[in-house]
Image (tube, rainbow, N blue to C red; front, side, top):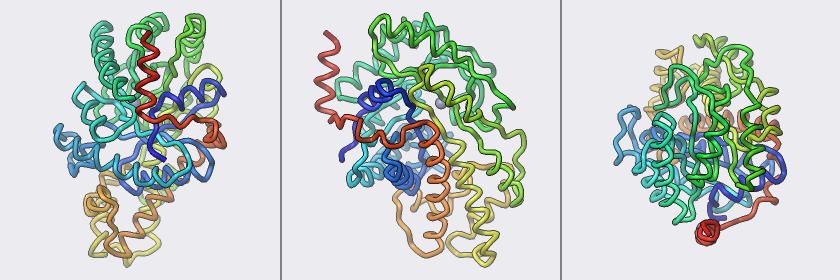
Length: 385
Ligand SMILES: [Zn+2]
């Protein structure tokens, strides 16, 4: 099936009271595996490319320095992979830009084939954030593409997202923001945090989600609420990585019980990245430990060297430079690369499959309306009246 915009899927989550995980992908193999595991659980799927991930998928290993041109190429590469696997899939699939940092990034993603974009103006003053978000909504909705905004500041690091301290979202401002911008989804700050060092026993301020949701209901306004920085950081995987020679410290996520408790409070989309990174990295380390002769493989020995030289890291992008052609286009030149791709796919399926079940999106795919971008253009037009 063709990719669908985010909006119809969000409407289903609100109607049936579950949350949809949204999973970041940085390689063709990850896109394939995310779609396959959602198919297995009969769940719709949201695949996310972060603004800078698009740079990586555009061939920039030093993705923090990616230019708009790199991101344009990468957005196309991700979209091509997601469209390829989504086209033959029976589940609804959304391709969403995570943390678009300006209008041009959003435009590049839409041109590349994304069906949903986030514009993150959360670091701007309130009025400027609204203005920027309104501008993106106008452009995106005219093309049937959904938009997520952000209000409030999360602590932690996620690619380009830096903030020293967390400032929770003010529910009154959130309602005003949603009314004025007509965003389809809003990322709120309520205690989650980007990155893998969220601290022990994080408690979420679920009252913030309840307050916003209650007001939206009273005003009869649709908007889904999004929980960013919501990786659970499974401790068994952290222990396994360290047992395989890794040096991960202070690595904690949000407990699955806290996340599940946030869902009936009005959280509809939950963004997860770190869990996948951890599972993929563990699989690669395990593979080289199990098959020491592969440590000197002509095609993948370089991955082993990078894993060994960066023991405190767990982002697969730090290790995959030797197989960028595979990352970007899915080409598999030999058996050794195929084995690494299998490690990546299995890691994705373990991390994502767990959360599909926990967040309650399994079995819900048939409830999601398959809306084309053209049809969505008409619906957005009708909503303006
Ligand atoms: Zn985020």
